[in-house]
Amino acid sequence: TTDGNYGGLGLSVTQEDGTVKVISPTEDTPADRAGIKAGDYITHLDGELLYGLELDEAVEKMRGPPGSPIKITIVRPGREKPFDVT
Image: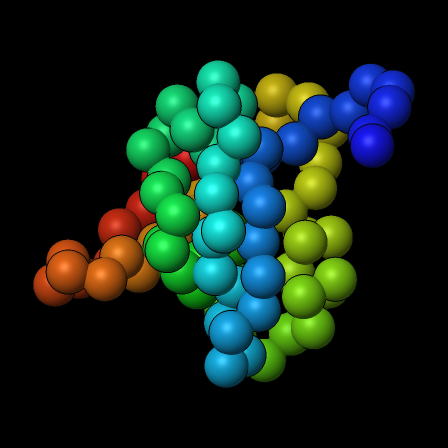
């Protein structure tokens, strides 16, 4: 159970072979509205490579004040090239 107020992207993530993989976006959160999907891989945050970081380190880099922008680079299976969402 999670109680209290907090800001975030609205993602559940795991680590798979050194990469951050999206388990699921939470409904009606910034991640959901940006079109992030289960199975996406997050490779960069604001241009910084995440590969090889511990999951806790990567999650910490995704945190910030509510409403602050962050650029996420996504690799989606079935798409030819990575793409960015803010």
